[in-house]
Every structure is written in C-alpha cells, then in structure tokens.
Length: 351
Image (cartoon, rainbow, N blue to C red; front, top):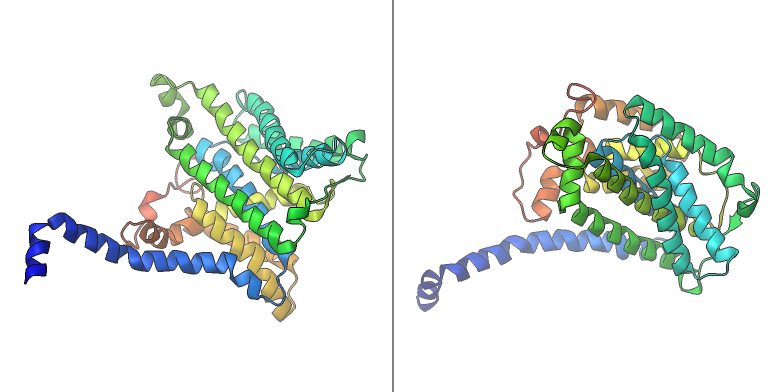
C-alpha cells in the first residue's frame, strides 16, 4: 500500500516508470540490430568482407544522392562521377603526395563537395530532364577523360594503400560503419536545421519559397555541397577498400545502381535506403553462394522489376513499408497505415 500511495502521490514517477518499461523492448531491438552489424560478421566462416564493406560504401553514396533527389528535388544520373572524384583525389593525395589516410579522407570529402558545387552552379540554370541529361553527360565525361588524366595514371589508375590500422578486412568494415554513422548523424542534423527546412521548401515549390524570402539559389548549392561531401567520403572508402582505383568500375552502371537504391529504398527515408542496400548488396552474395545465382542477375533482372513495383504501388519504397517499425524503434507508436505520409512523386502526383 505504501508503494501504491507513493506512486499515486508522484504521478511523474509513474510516467517515468511507464516510459522505462516502454523502452525495454525497443532497446532490445536496437541491441539485436547492433549485434547483427558488429558481432554477427565475426561468426561467419565466409565473411565476404568486400561485399559487406561495399554495401556500406553504396549506402553512403545513396544517402548523398537522397540529399539531391529526395530533399532538394534535383535529379542526378551521373553521381558516380562525384564518387570517382573523391576516390581519385584521395588516392592521389595519399600515394603521390605521401599524405596520411586521414588527410586523404578529408581531401576526398572536399573534392566531392567542390565538384558537386560546380554542378550545382549549372543546376541553377537548368532543371528536370535537362539537369538529368547534364549530370549524365558529366558522369560519362568524367569516366572517359577526367579519370584518365596523367596525374591519375592515364587509365592505369592510382594505388590506394590502407593504413596499418585498417589493413584487416574486419577493421576496414567497422571503420566504414563509423563513417556511415557520422553521415547519418550529419544527415539527421541537416534535415532538422534551418538549411534543411529551406531546401525542402525549395523542393516543394521554388516560387513559393522565394516569395517567403528564401534564397533559392543559395540553398540549392548547399544541398549540392552536402551531397558532394557525402559521396566524396564514399569514394574515398571505395578506393581504399579495393586498394586501387581506376575508371573501369566507376561507370554508368554504378550510377543506375545508386538511383535504384535511393528510389526503391525510399526518397527521404535513410532507414529504407540502408535496409534496401543490405538486402540488395549483401544478401544476394549468400543466396548466390547457396543457389548458384550470380549477383549480376539481381542487378539486371530483379532490380528493374523492384523499381517498377515501387514506382507504381509503393512510392515511399522500402521506407514506406518499414515505417511502423522505425517509428516504434525511435519511441513512436506502431502504426501500420503510413502511406499517406509519402508524396506520390512521378506517378500519380506532382512531377
């Protein structure tokens, strides 16, 4: 009775107790997720470290593309060009100028931001289909000319040796996860900042945003810079994961793959992008080992089918489907019907 009376006398304590109880299963779910990412790889006989780390790299690159397409409404079909700039510059700084890996990581992010900023200046004058064509041409030009310059090995590529701390496959994977966590945190802060809200307003309607005093050009450029910094980091990780970078792997197929991850994962849904990257990049490796299916089948056959299904039936992508789970894990209610929160872009809604 004394305990009951104490709880009744202190309703705040009762609310705190309910909050703690409510968070116990959520923390357990977060623990399972952390164990899968951090502990489970250690138990695998065949880790496929290259594929796991590459999945993290593509997740970061897709998050950067989401900043442009999802938040700013700017279409990019040549995003592999910005990734390649970060990869080549970071490898060049480390190999030719004998700088540390950490300097190369910073150089990759800065070079990606600068290259994306230059494209943003072009984007101020064109939009929609014309911007998509410009970015497509840029990606092709970068692959055929920029990445074949003499300072980048004239087509033979540039060595990208890992530092001693990251020589192990597991070590590099865990470091890539740390970079991904940093990108997710910065993305979260950006969306909730004044700049992020302004970018979203520009995406919805540039004329209305301008009428409210929002400098449209400035915030478009900010979106390009943030996106470029993210993809520059992805490019740096890509280069040092492979130990060498050349123009052969950084091609239009990669650009399409990044668009596929971003759209099917869910525009403006980082969680959906991460889940779909894992399902599409890591899972097929183990399924392929078991059933003898090549990874290219998933990309060339299953990928377009998923894209069509998403565009027609689930415009929110994987993010729309897992929204009840992500809402619950972040402290919100578990509500199944969240489809109304996703904009019907490109199919039955606005262009």
